[in-house]
Length: 562
Image (cartoon, rainbow, N blue to C red):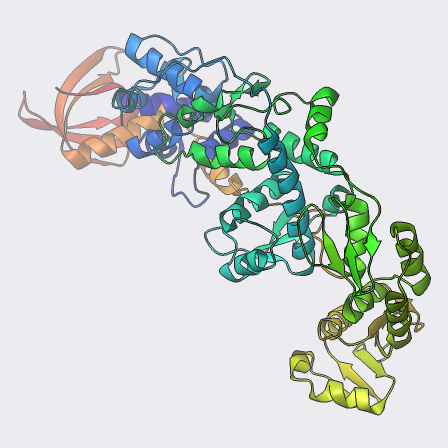
């Protein structure tokens, strides 16, 4: 074992459990690693491949600091403490194994300090407006039909195609970036390979465009990789490519594209926009001045369409979408009322009065007669099918208003997964109430969910992520730490001596062995190590041409003969 591994083993053993766990996590240690003691851990962490992986996480400033220390033979300043946290230095001196790898890597250019700000960028402001709208659309579709994730972490092809065909995203390559932005803003959470909308997103959806963007931009800036930051701000975008100079897999283009999507940098010049660097009211007002003016009134047409003369205020847009289908995603949006869209609103708790009151306040043209008639007719048909839980059997009971409707449900092939069975005048299913009601609503039936008393209850249109859901999967390193600690209970020097002797015997190495004699004197033997056992080292003393057996407990110094 090398001396630096011996030194690192001692350093690891001296750490608290919390500190040791942090080092192992920072170095990407596997919970299933077969390390028996701190020496195994030290040897593994100083392997060239492990060192390179750790060096790849260093920012340009940290890499420059370490490179200078290696080349100049001095101690690293390690201002950020990252080098110590990654167990790359002993005090401030790089471990020899680390220094050897660093010497094989290129020098690090000095980072820039000045950040040139774009004077004005209407196109970036448009990107900010578009991103807020597209993310709102993604959240709404994910609420009803969560986006599935494949093994690589990307959105499944089927969902990707659906999002594009629905016109929710202009560029399909932006979908994963938008989902990433939403997840970092805590608007989407990954639960069992599905992106589910968070409870926090419900408030975000009802905020104005400027407020929506501000939340996205703030969380994006706060979670920028350390290498892209300078103090409280960020590094010049032209330096982003060199943010992690020893990481061959680092692609600044991904981060530049995300910043461009959010309107934080001008895509043409890569200069930050005036509202990008500061989190103050003036910056937000500067962006707001470039955003399209939101409207709070619409035109209701005789053909059941709705025309918004500009971007509809988000809170109004969200509610209008519960009772109509959005047809265009331009700034002057259009919507359309259908029997199914109004039925959806009623199932989610709207009433005839609430619909009429909302549309009456929203419309610049009143409620046209065709729309008024459609509302009345839809309300009349609503509840022809009721779905509730049977208090006796626990099954879901489906009640229908006519024999003809019951027959339709019985033979509808799209409802076969519900397993509907005849029970007197009703139908029953083992599937839960809400799932049955949603399936019937998706099949365009006039369904209402009811409680145990038979009273209508709002049907939740989709699923929200549990409040305790998290996207981060933290490996459990406690068993590994416990194993290293149990092996560390014995004297560290004795453990190191045992390992060195075992390695020497395996290699039939020639050793200089210093032992303490009974009279207190010391004597050094040069032995060809041949065996170890019973607490004794056996080896051939070439000078005397005899085999000697030395008690390991009496060995005070050990060195491999050159």
